[in-house]
Length: 470
Image (tube, rainbow, N blue to C red; front, side):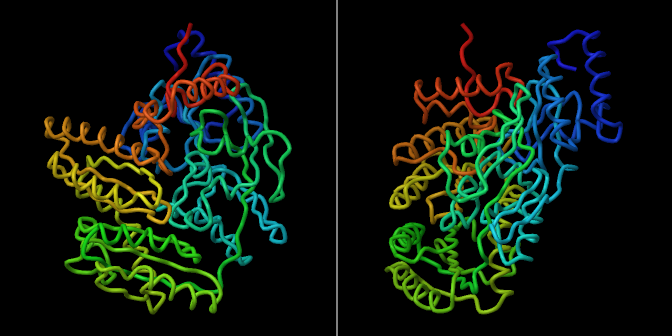
């Protein structure tokens, strides 16, 4: 087990562990544990054990046991995260929620659903749809990613531009802290101001403050109708300017996605949609609401989108057209990973009005370092996925890519932006956190971590730099 305990204590820990988990809910063989030591960042570290959670009470007992033996616990959903946040870099046990995947109840009259953390985003959408609702967060990996992971990263997706991020769509949580205490946060109402907002604090904390065992999610009624537009431009600058113009209108799209020229060309062979040729960039715009609202909204969007660089506006006429467009957008990340397995994928955010400045300067950095940079993402709220395409076998190029990345982050912060909008920090961005957060902020966050997890057993080594031990 952990290097912090000797062999006799290791044997004692294993014996007590077997009293908490049945043989079918526990992996100890190194070969079987191996696959649980990675996430979609491609980083890897081997866990000492993999445990499959079944109940809240069981997790409380596990935390108390791990605290006694100073054993790290890393909570894990489907492993779709891209930042190494579920990689057990300090050893310990992986606590998998794939067997704790039940929807515990739907209260349609109160617009909420209660679920365990291992339920997939898609399962929540399917269950909610039966009652005429949906849950707004819709990450690219929605078919397989879990609610626990969505909460851990504050993942959002395209619909966040209108409906908000995960934080805005969760009413309450049940959490086990690093002390083994149970916290019930939030309320089942859409308004409530008693005490501090621990729900929003825990969401996005990447399993470093507590282990979520249950969530109360706020549902939104499904729209009567939707309209989807594909708008192509002669340059990324024209498209970026259109984003600012569209978002200045009183009608808010439920999705506004940006795809640059390189991304269009790379995805062409993976798409059944009619992608524009010789375009510098493309926008996907979706509106939802009543028929009268859509008629007025569509006119407003089209007028604001028609700048001097606009080449073509295509309205999706059939359900298949819409499906093809969204399949194209969701295939971008997997396709890029096949083309460039060592791509550096960042999810920076800038104010919408500064997207043109961001895109223009990313172009400049691409030319300066001679590194292809592919940009796409949720332009409606300034969340752009910046992909630096590199060759893992070229050491000099890797050094240049890191230098380029440093400048990308400096650029984003100079534009009043932030280093991550939805992918989280994990391991891969941890070294850059101090560029955005000053020493005072970090000290307060480290004190919060100490209060929730005094022995640093919950996903240690992630999210923020550790406090200096005096």
